[in-house]
Image 1 (tube, rainbow, N blue to C red):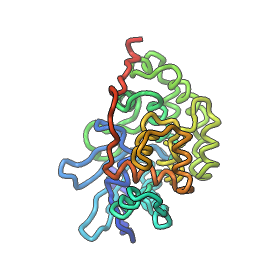
Image 2 (cartoon, rainbow, N blue to C red):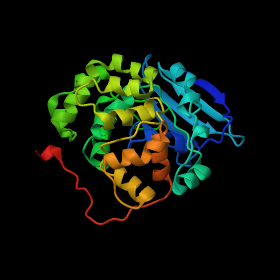
Image 3 (cartoon, helix red, strand yellow):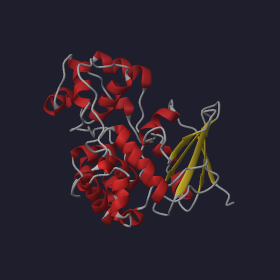
Image 4 (tube, rainbow, N blue to C red):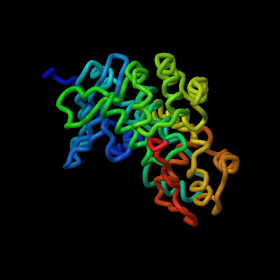
Length: 304
């Protein structure tokens, strides 16, 4: 077996290793993610400009992060370790304007990581458009298992690399249907795969400019671009406008009533250019909004 590319890095800030990586996990059965049974290590896979890579992360008692990576993209992945774990983020400049957010910021000191890769975040983000998380995660699992290559190196059994843009364009229509993906989401993913090399530039542009580039692709709207930006370049201002739940949660948490996107935009205005960080503090604060109606019911596109 090829020797791994290794690196040790000790951050100069308090690092919640699991917390900073958590947004990259797409459900409990995500084939691109594993946590060791004893919790001592996190494994994740991804595509890179150089090819597939498997990354294993663990921590020593002194806070040093120990990384090992396998596959053609191992060196690229290890080189970006500090950015992945939030070294490029600037949480200290954040100013809270609500007691709930101030308390969460004091306790959590949230760091936003950046993968540096658009495609691996775009594919699952499109799958999550206008469906429940359960539906989207099921589709992601099935497509990765069937069309993603096995994880390089000594990865835990069953781990897969996300399907590459080239492999994605080869997926037959009936396989999308079998994975529960409707035609609108399929078209958006295929349109993105056709220009995937250009879309990677969005991570270099960052901010609103990067999000605008993503939205040039048919089927990539404000919500999807924000979900990608939050993970690919740690965009602290990329709010997921159009989300089914977020405006209501933010509204109840900050002003005591549900909001729509317009109302949420107004309430979050003082937090620019870190509005996404404010939303994340609300989500991580432990606040739970009142529930008055039935849960959103999943739809099975495979039966249509």
